[in-house]
Image (tube, rainbow, N blue to C red; front, top):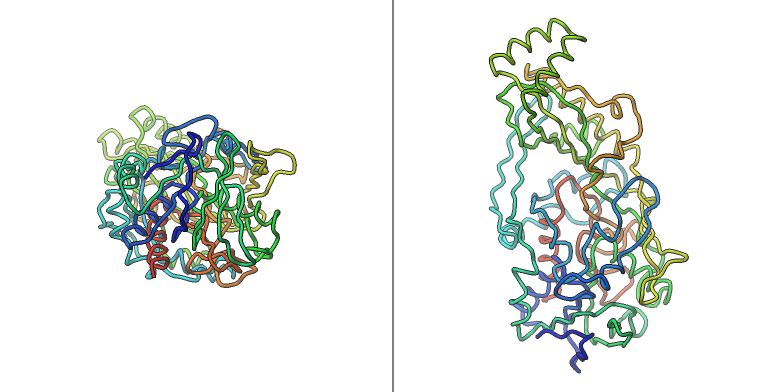
Length: 471
Protein backbone atom coordinates (compact mmCIF):
# COMPACT_ATOMS: atom_id res chain seq x y z
CA UNK A 1 0.00 0.00 0.00
CA UNK A 2 1.19 3.52 -0.84
CA UNK A 3 0.32 6.47 1.40
CA UNK A 4 1.43 10.08 0.83
CA UNK A 5 1.29 11.85 4.18
CA UNK A 6 1.12 15.27 2.51
CA UNK A 7 -2.06 14.27 0.71
CA UNK A 8 -4.05 13.77 3.92
CA UNK A 9 -2.71 10.27 4.26
CA UNK A 10 -2.72 8.63 7.67
CA UNK A 11 -0.35 6.06 9.12
CA UNK A 12 -2.19 2.78 9.76
CA UNK A 13 -2.94 2.14 13.42
CA UNK A 14 -0.71 -0.86 13.92
CA UNK A 15 2.72 -1.88 15.18
CA UNK A 16 5.02 -2.99 12.37
CA UNK A 17 7.73 -5.57 12.77
CA UNK A 18 10.24 -3.17 11.16
CA UNK A 19 10.17 0.53 10.28
CA UNK A 20 12.74 1.46 7.61
CA UNK A 21 13.64 5.13 7.25
CA UNK A 22 14.81 5.80 3.70
CA UNK A 23 13.83 4.19 0.38
CA UNK A 24 17.06 3.93 -1.56
CA UNK A 25 18.94 0.79 -2.57
CA UNK A 26 19.31 -0.46 1.01
CA UNK A 27 15.82 0.48 2.23
CA UNK A 28 13.96 -0.95 -0.77
CA UNK A 29 15.97 -4.18 -0.78
CA UNK A 30 15.54 -4.64 2.97
CA UNK A 31 11.77 -4.02 2.81
CA UNK A 32 11.27 -6.59 0.06
CA UNK A 33 13.36 -9.26 1.77
CA UNK A 34 11.65 -8.76 5.14
CA UNK A 35 8.22 -8.94 3.51
CA UNK A 36 9.24 -12.19 1.80
CA UNK A 37 10.17 -13.49 5.27
CA UNK A 38 6.66 -12.66 6.54
CA UNK A 39 7.48 -9.42 8.36
CA UNK A 40 5.29 -6.32 8.29
CA UNK A 41 7.21 -3.27 7.13
CA UNK A 42 6.72 0.50 7.09
CA UNK A 43 9.03 1.89 4.39
CA UNK A 44 9.27 5.63 5.05
CA UNK A 45 10.56 8.03 2.40
CA UNK A 46 10.98 11.76 2.99
CA UNK A 47 10.47 12.52 -0.69
CA UNK A 48 7.77 11.36 -3.04
CA UNK A 49 7.82 9.08 -6.08
CA UNK A 50 9.46 11.79 -8.18
CA UNK A 51 11.93 14.61 -7.69
CA UNK A 52 10.73 17.76 -5.96
CA UNK A 53 12.58 20.85 -4.82
CA UNK A 54 10.74 20.81 -1.50
CA UNK A 55 12.35 17.48 -0.67
CA UNK A 56 15.74 18.02 -2.29
CA UNK A 57 16.38 21.30 -0.48
CA UNK A 58 16.69 19.36 2.78
CA UNK A 59 20.04 18.11 1.47
CA UNK A 60 21.58 21.58 1.28
CA UNK A 61 24.70 21.74 3.42
CA UNK A 62 28.24 23.06 3.66
CA UNK A 63 31.53 21.36 2.77
CA UNK A 64 34.61 22.36 4.76
CA UNK A 65 37.99 21.25 3.43
CA UNK A 66 38.87 19.96 -0.03
CA UNK A 67 36.88 20.78 -3.14
CA UNK A 68 33.78 18.64 -3.32
CA UNK A 69 30.33 18.52 -4.89
CA UNK A 70 27.36 20.50 -3.60
CA UNK A 71 25.62 18.31 -1.04
CA UNK A 72 22.20 18.81 -2.62
CA UNK A 73 23.44 17.53 -6.00
CA UNK A 74 25.65 14.61 -4.98
CA UNK A 75 22.59 12.65 -3.72
CA UNK A 76 18.86 12.46 -4.46
CA UNK A 77 15.95 12.59 -2.03
CA UNK A 78 12.95 10.73 -3.48
CA UNK A 79 11.84 7.12 -3.90
CA UNK A 80 14.81 5.12 -5.16
CA UNK A 81 17.31 7.54 -3.63
CA UNK A 82 20.59 8.06 -5.40
CA UNK A 83 20.05 4.97 -7.58
CA UNK A 84 18.06 7.43 -9.70
CA UNK A 85 21.36 8.84 -10.98
CA UNK A 86 23.53 5.74 -10.51
CA UNK A 87 25.82 4.94 -13.43
CA UNK A 88 25.75 1.15 -12.93
CA UNK A 89 29.48 0.44 -12.40
CA UNK A 90 29.70 -2.59 -10.09
CA UNK A 91 32.28 -4.63 -8.22
CA UNK A 92 32.56 -6.44 -4.91
CA UNK A 93 34.99 -5.55 -2.13
CA UNK A 94 38.25 -7.51 -2.23
CA UNK A 95 39.36 -9.85 0.53
CA UNK A 96 42.22 -7.50 1.42
CA UNK A 97 39.70 -4.71 2.06
CA UNK A 98 38.65 -6.55 5.23
CA UNK A 99 42.25 -7.22 6.32
CA UNK A 100 43.77 -3.79 6.90
CA UNK A 101 44.78 -4.43 10.52
CA UNK A 102 48.40 -3.80 9.50
CA UNK A 103 47.48 -0.10 9.22
CA UNK A 104 45.95 0.24 12.67
CA UNK A 105 42.89 -0.63 14.79
CA UNK A 106 40.63 1.89 13.02
CA UNK A 107 40.89 -0.26 9.87
CA UNK A 108 39.57 -3.45 11.52
CA UNK A 109 36.20 -4.87 10.41
CA UNK A 110 34.23 -7.23 12.69
CA UNK A 111 33.38 -9.34 9.60
CA UNK A 112 35.30 -10.49 6.56
CA UNK A 113 34.53 -11.15 2.92
CA UNK A 114 33.30 -14.69 3.60
CA UNK A 115 30.44 -13.25 5.67
CA UNK A 116 29.18 -11.43 2.55
CA UNK A 117 29.95 -14.10 -0.05
CA UNK A 118 26.65 -16.00 0.49
CA UNK A 119 24.76 -12.89 -0.65
CA UNK A 120 26.88 -12.11 -3.70
CA UNK A 121 24.87 -13.91 -6.39
CA UNK A 122 21.55 -12.48 -5.18
CA UNK A 123 23.02 -8.96 -4.98
CA UNK A 124 24.25 -9.31 -8.59
CA UNK A 125 20.81 -10.50 -9.64
CA UNK A 126 19.15 -7.43 -8.09
CA UNK A 127 21.23 -5.04 -10.17
CA UNK A 128 21.17 -7.41 -13.16
CA UNK A 129 24.89 -8.08 -13.62
CA UNK A 130 26.62 -11.47 -14.01
CA UNK A 131 28.05 -12.96 -10.85
CA UNK A 132 31.25 -14.10 -12.59
CA UNK A 133 34.02 -11.52 -12.31
CA UNK A 134 37.13 -12.39 -14.31
CA UNK A 135 40.22 -11.01 -12.57
CA UNK A 136 43.65 -11.96 -13.90
CA UNK A 137 47.15 -11.74 -12.43
CA UNK A 138 49.32 -10.11 -15.09
CA UNK A 139 52.71 -9.78 -13.39
CA UNK A 140 53.62 -11.87 -10.37
CA UNK A 141 56.88 -10.07 -9.65
CA UNK A 142 55.46 -6.54 -9.69
CA UNK A 143 52.01 -7.54 -8.46
CA UNK A 144 49.69 -6.06 -11.09
CA UNK A 145 46.36 -7.66 -11.90
CA UNK A 146 43.60 -6.86 -14.33
CA UNK A 147 40.29 -6.52 -12.52
CA UNK A 148 36.76 -6.84 -13.79
CA UNK A 149 33.89 -4.40 -13.37
CA UNK A 150 30.37 -5.17 -14.48
CA UNK A 151 27.94 -2.53 -15.68
CA UNK A 152 24.29 -2.59 -14.75
CA UNK A 153 21.77 -1.21 -17.28
CA UNK A 154 21.77 0.67 -14.81
CA UNK A 155 18.94 -0.58 -12.62
CA UNK A 156 17.05 2.33 -11.07
CA UNK A 157 15.34 0.94 -8.00
CA UNK A 158 12.34 3.26 -8.33
CA UNK A 159 11.49 1.87 -11.77
CA UNK A 160 12.25 -1.75 -10.99
CA UNK A 161 10.65 -2.14 -7.59
CA UNK A 162 7.83 0.39 -7.20
CA UNK A 163 5.14 -2.14 -8.17
CA UNK A 164 6.69 -4.83 -5.96
CA UNK A 165 6.59 -2.44 -3.01
CA UNK A 166 3.13 -0.97 -3.56
CA UNK A 167 1.51 -4.33 -4.40
CA UNK A 168 2.88 -6.07 -1.30
CA UNK A 169 0.35 -6.78 1.43
CA UNK A 170 3.15 -6.63 4.00
CA UNK A 171 4.74 -3.30 3.03
CA UNK A 172 3.25 0.15 3.59
CA UNK A 173 5.17 2.76 1.60
CA UNK A 174 4.84 6.11 3.39
CA UNK A 175 5.81 9.08 1.20
CA UNK A 176 6.44 12.66 2.39
CA UNK A 177 7.52 10.99 5.65
CA UNK A 178 10.33 13.20 6.90
CA UNK A 179 11.99 11.73 9.98
CA UNK A 180 12.21 14.15 12.91
CA UNK A 181 12.36 12.14 16.16
CA UNK A 182 12.11 8.88 18.10
CA UNK A 183 10.05 8.05 21.14
CA UNK A 184 10.26 5.24 23.69
CA UNK A 185 11.93 4.21 26.95
CA UNK A 186 15.69 4.01 27.52
CA UNK A 187 17.60 1.98 24.89
CA UNK A 188 14.38 0.92 23.12
CA UNK A 189 12.52 2.99 20.56
CA UNK A 190 8.80 2.30 20.23
CA UNK A 191 7.83 4.85 17.59
CA UNK A 192 9.40 7.08 14.96
CA UNK A 193 8.00 10.56 14.42
CA UNK A 194 7.67 11.96 10.90
CA UNK A 195 6.57 15.31 9.54
CA UNK A 196 4.80 15.89 6.25
CA UNK A 197 5.33 19.06 4.21
CA UNK A 198 2.40 20.81 5.86
CA UNK A 199 4.00 20.44 9.30
CA UNK A 200 1.72 17.64 10.56
CA UNK A 201 3.38 14.96 12.66
CA UNK A 202 2.78 11.23 12.23
CA UNK A 203 3.89 8.30 14.37
CA UNK A 204 4.97 4.91 13.14
CA UNK A 205 5.04 2.20 15.82
CA UNK A 206 7.40 -0.73 15.30
CA UNK A 207 9.41 -3.40 17.04
CA UNK A 208 12.64 -2.48 15.20
CA UNK A 209 13.87 0.58 13.32
CA UNK A 210 16.44 0.79 10.53
CA UNK A 211 18.08 4.00 9.36
CA UNK A 212 18.74 3.64 5.63
CA UNK A 213 19.00 7.28 4.60
CA UNK A 214 22.42 7.20 2.97
CA UNK A 215 26.07 7.78 3.82
CA UNK A 216 25.50 11.34 5.05
CA UNK A 217 21.92 11.44 6.39
CA UNK A 218 22.30 8.39 8.62
CA UNK A 219 24.97 10.25 10.57
CA UNK A 220 23.08 13.53 10.48
CA UNK A 221 19.84 12.10 11.90
CA UNK A 222 21.59 10.08 14.58
CA UNK A 223 23.58 13.15 15.59
CA UNK A 224 20.27 15.01 15.83
CA UNK A 225 18.88 12.29 18.10
CA UNK A 226 22.02 12.42 20.23
CA UNK A 227 21.68 16.20 20.53
CA UNK A 228 18.05 15.86 21.65
CA UNK A 229 18.24 12.74 23.81
CA UNK A 230 21.91 12.18 24.72
CA UNK A 231 22.27 8.47 25.59
CA UNK A 232 18.56 7.69 25.85
CA UNK A 233 18.39 5.50 22.74
CA UNK A 234 22.02 4.54 22.09
CA UNK A 235 25.58 4.97 23.32
CA UNK A 236 26.45 8.66 22.87
CA UNK A 237 30.20 8.16 23.31
CA UNK A 238 30.81 6.44 19.96
CA UNK A 239 32.51 8.32 17.06
CA UNK A 240 29.19 9.06 15.36
CA UNK A 241 29.65 10.90 12.07
CA UNK A 242 33.42 10.38 12.09
CA UNK A 243 35.62 8.39 9.68
CA UNK A 244 33.61 9.52 6.66
CA UNK A 245 35.11 8.39 3.36
CA UNK A 246 34.94 8.99 -0.38
CA UNK A 247 36.80 7.62 -3.40
CA UNK A 248 39.15 10.29 -4.80
CA UNK A 249 39.07 10.31 -8.63
CA UNK A 250 41.91 11.97 -10.57
CA UNK A 251 43.84 11.66 -13.79
CA UNK A 252 47.45 10.75 -13.00
CA UNK A 253 49.31 11.22 -16.26
CA UNK A 254 49.80 9.76 -19.70
CA UNK A 255 51.93 7.16 -21.43
CA UNK A 256 52.90 5.50 -24.65
CA UNK A 257 52.03 1.83 -24.37
CA UNK A 258 51.99 -1.16 -26.63
CA UNK A 259 48.75 -1.71 -28.49
CA UNK A 260 48.49 -5.06 -26.71
CA UNK A 261 47.45 -3.02 -23.65
CA UNK A 262 43.66 -2.81 -23.91
CA UNK A 263 41.99 0.54 -23.51
CA UNK A 264 39.11 0.76 -21.06
CA UNK A 265 40.42 -2.02 -18.83
CA UNK A 266 41.01 -1.72 -15.10
CA UNK A 267 44.01 -2.70 -13.01
CA UNK A 268 44.89 -2.98 -9.34
CA UNK A 269 47.72 -4.27 -7.17
CA UNK A 270 47.82 -7.59 -5.36
CA UNK A 271 47.13 -7.81 -1.65
CA UNK A 272 50.78 -8.67 -1.00
CA UNK A 273 52.02 -5.53 -2.74
CA UNK A 274 49.53 -3.37 -0.87
CA UNK A 275 50.72 -4.81 2.44
CA UNK A 276 54.40 -4.50 1.54
CA UNK A 277 53.97 -0.85 0.60
CA UNK A 278 51.61 -0.04 3.51
CA UNK A 279 49.03 1.38 1.11
CA UNK A 280 45.35 0.99 0.27
CA UNK A 281 43.51 -0.22 -2.81
CA UNK A 282 43.96 1.85 -5.97
CA UNK A 283 42.34 1.21 -9.35
CA UNK A 284 43.97 2.34 -12.60
CA UNK A 285 42.17 2.81 -15.91
CA UNK A 286 43.88 3.37 -19.25
CA UNK A 287 41.89 5.58 -21.61
CA UNK A 288 43.20 5.39 -25.17
CA UNK A 289 43.87 8.74 -26.85
CA UNK A 290 43.71 9.64 -30.55
CA UNK A 291 46.51 9.75 -33.11
CA UNK A 292 47.26 13.44 -32.54
CA UNK A 293 47.76 12.88 -28.80
CA UNK A 294 50.01 9.90 -29.55
CA UNK A 295 52.16 11.99 -31.91
CA UNK A 296 52.44 14.75 -29.30
CA UNK A 297 53.60 12.23 -26.68
CA UNK A 298 56.23 10.91 -29.10
CA UNK A 299 57.51 14.45 -29.74
CA UNK A 300 57.69 15.13 -26.01
CA UNK A 301 59.61 11.90 -25.47
CA UNK A 302 62.10 12.77 -28.21
CA UNK A 303 62.98 15.91 -26.28
CA UNK A 304 63.81 14.15 -23.01
CA UNK A 305 64.91 10.67 -24.16
CA UNK A 306 65.89 10.82 -27.85
CA UNK A 307 66.83 7.15 -28.15
CA UNK A 308 63.62 5.87 -26.63
CA UNK A 309 61.68 8.54 -28.51
CA UNK A 310 63.03 7.37 -31.86
CA UNK A 311 62.12 3.78 -31.05
CA UNK A 312 58.60 4.82 -29.99
CA UNK A 313 58.24 6.94 -33.14
CA UNK A 314 59.06 3.92 -35.26
CA UNK A 315 56.56 1.79 -33.36
CA UNK A 316 53.91 4.50 -33.64
CA UNK A 317 54.39 4.65 -37.41
CA UNK A 318 53.59 0.94 -37.50
CA UNK A 319 50.62 1.35 -35.13
CA UNK A 320 52.37 -0.71 -32.45
CA UNK A 321 52.10 1.91 -29.70
CA UNK A 322 49.39 4.35 -28.74
CA UNK A 323 48.95 7.15 -26.26
CA UNK A 324 46.81 6.58 -23.19
CA UNK A 325 45.58 8.76 -20.36
CA UNK A 326 45.74 7.25 -16.89
CA UNK A 327 42.79 7.72 -14.57
CA UNK A 328 42.53 6.43 -11.05
CA UNK A 329 40.10 5.96 -8.19
CA UNK A 330 41.37 4.83 -4.84
CA UNK A 331 40.47 3.88 -1.32
CA UNK A 332 40.55 6.68 1.21
CA UNK A 333 41.97 6.12 4.67
CA UNK A 334 39.36 6.36 7.45
CA UNK A 335 40.25 9.36 9.59
CA UNK A 336 38.24 10.87 12.47
CA UNK A 337 38.74 14.42 11.18
CA UNK A 338 36.68 13.55 8.09
CA UNK A 339 33.20 13.71 9.53
CA UNK A 340 29.55 14.66 9.29
CA UNK A 341 28.74 17.45 11.73
CA UNK A 342 25.56 19.38 12.53
CA UNK A 343 25.57 23.03 11.51
CA UNK A 344 25.55 25.57 14.33
CA UNK A 345 23.38 27.97 12.33
CA UNK A 346 21.62 26.49 9.29
CA UNK A 347 18.51 24.31 9.61
CA UNK A 348 16.20 22.58 7.17
CA UNK A 349 12.46 23.23 6.92
CA UNK A 350 11.79 20.76 9.75
CA UNK A 351 14.11 22.52 12.18
CA UNK A 352 16.87 19.92 11.99
CA UNK A 353 20.44 21.27 11.70
CA UNK A 354 21.85 21.06 8.18
CA UNK A 355 24.93 19.05 7.31
CA UNK A 356 28.43 20.38 7.72
CA UNK A 357 30.68 17.89 5.93
CA UNK A 358 34.37 18.05 6.84
CA UNK A 359 36.44 16.30 4.18
CA UNK A 360 40.14 16.41 3.42
CA UNK A 361 42.35 13.88 1.74
CA UNK A 362 44.93 12.44 4.11
CA UNK A 363 48.67 11.65 3.77
CA UNK A 364 47.94 7.94 3.30
CA UNK A 365 45.63 8.83 0.41
CA UNK A 366 48.48 10.50 -1.49
CA UNK A 367 50.93 7.78 -0.43
CA UNK A 368 48.54 5.21 -1.90
CA UNK A 369 48.21 6.83 -5.31
CA UNK A 370 51.92 7.80 -5.59
CA UNK A 371 53.14 4.31 -4.69
CA UNK A 372 50.56 2.69 -6.96
CA UNK A 373 51.56 4.90 -9.92
CA UNK A 374 55.22 4.01 -9.37
CA UNK A 375 54.45 0.29 -9.31
CA UNK A 376 52.31 0.52 -12.44
CA UNK A 377 55.21 2.32 -14.14
CA UNK A 378 57.60 -0.45 -13.05
CA UNK A 379 55.23 -2.96 -14.63
CA UNK A 380 55.11 -1.14 -17.96
CA UNK A 381 58.87 -0.59 -18.03
CA UNK A 382 59.72 -4.11 -16.91
CA UNK A 383 57.55 -5.73 -19.57
CA UNK A 384 58.68 -3.16 -22.16
CA UNK A 385 55.06 -2.06 -22.49
CA UNK A 386 55.53 1.68 -22.14
CA UNK A 387 56.35 4.48 -19.74
CA UNK A 388 54.17 6.75 -17.60
CA UNK A 389 54.65 10.52 -17.46
CA UNK A 390 52.98 11.64 -14.27
CA UNK A 391 51.15 14.94 -14.06
CA UNK A 392 53.03 17.63 -12.15
CA UNK A 393 50.60 17.73 -9.20
CA UNK A 394 51.50 14.14 -8.41
CA UNK A 395 55.17 14.24 -9.41
CA UNK A 396 55.99 17.45 -7.55
CA UNK A 397 53.68 16.99 -4.56
CA UNK A 398 51.47 19.90 -5.55
CA UNK A 399 47.87 20.44 -4.48
CA UNK A 400 45.23 18.18 -5.99
CA UNK A 401 43.72 19.66 -9.17
CA UNK A 402 40.39 21.41 -8.67
CA UNK A 403 39.27 21.18 -12.31
CA UNK A 404 39.01 17.41 -12.08
CA UNK A 405 36.54 14.63 -11.45
CA UNK A 406 37.33 14.95 -7.71
CA UNK A 407 35.47 11.93 -6.34
CA UNK A 408 32.89 9.26 -7.05
CA UNK A 409 29.77 10.54 -5.24
CA UNK A 410 30.36 7.59 -2.92
CA UNK A 411 29.44 8.40 0.68
CA UNK A 412 30.78 5.87 3.17
CA UNK A 413 31.40 5.65 6.89
CA UNK A 414 30.02 7.78 9.70
CA UNK A 415 28.10 4.91 11.35
CA UNK A 416 30.93 2.44 10.83
CA UNK A 417 30.90 -1.19 11.85
CA UNK A 418 33.18 -2.58 14.56
CA UNK A 419 33.54 -4.25 17.93
CA UNK A 420 35.32 -1.41 19.75
CA UNK A 421 32.83 1.29 20.69
CA UNK A 422 35.52 3.96 20.66
CA UNK A 423 36.08 3.21 16.95
CA UNK A 424 32.62 2.23 15.70
CA UNK A 425 28.90 3.00 15.85
CA UNK A 426 27.25 -0.32 14.92
CA UNK A 427 28.13 -3.93 15.66
CA UNK A 428 28.66 -6.76 13.18
CA UNK A 429 24.87 -7.04 12.71
CA UNK A 430 24.45 -3.30 12.07
CA UNK A 431 22.78 -2.70 15.44
CA UNK A 432 23.68 0.67 16.91
CA UNK A 433 25.83 0.30 20.02
CA UNK A 434 23.81 0.72 23.20
CA UNK A 435 20.44 0.25 21.52
CA UNK A 436 18.10 -2.71 21.72
CA UNK A 437 16.35 -2.16 18.39
CA UNK A 438 17.98 0.56 16.25
CA UNK A 439 19.98 -0.41 13.16
CA UNK A 440 21.79 1.31 10.30
CA UNK A 441 21.96 0.07 6.71
CA UNK A 442 23.89 1.15 3.65
CA UNK A 443 27.40 2.38 3.02
CA UNK A 444 27.48 4.45 6.22
CA UNK A 445 28.37 1.19 8.04
CA UNK A 446 31.51 0.59 5.93
CA UNK A 447 34.59 0.36 8.16
CA UNK A 448 36.90 0.85 5.20
CA UNK A 449 35.89 1.57 1.64
CA UNK A 450 38.03 -0.42 -0.80
CA UNK A 451 38.13 1.21 -4.23
CA UNK A 452 35.04 -0.50 -5.67
CA UNK A 453 31.80 1.37 -6.24
CA UNK A 454 29.69 0.77 -3.12
CA UNK A 455 26.33 -0.33 -4.57
CA UNK A 456 27.06 -4.05 -4.84
CA UNK A 457 28.58 -4.31 -1.31
CA UNK A 458 25.65 -2.27 0.04
CA UNK A 459 23.26 -4.89 -1.31
CA UNK A 460 25.30 -7.78 0.10
CA UNK A 461 25.29 -6.20 3.55
CA UNK A 462 21.60 -5.38 3.29
CA UNK A 463 20.70 -8.97 2.41
CA UNK A 464 22.76 -10.13 5.38
CA UNK A 465 20.93 -7.65 7.64
CA UNK A 466 17.60 -8.91 6.30
CA UNK A 467 18.53 -12.44 7.37
CA UNK A 468 19.42 -11.17 10.83
CA UNK A 469 16.18 -9.21 11.26
CA UNK A 470 14.09 -12.09 9.95
CA UNK A 471 15.05 -14.46 12.77
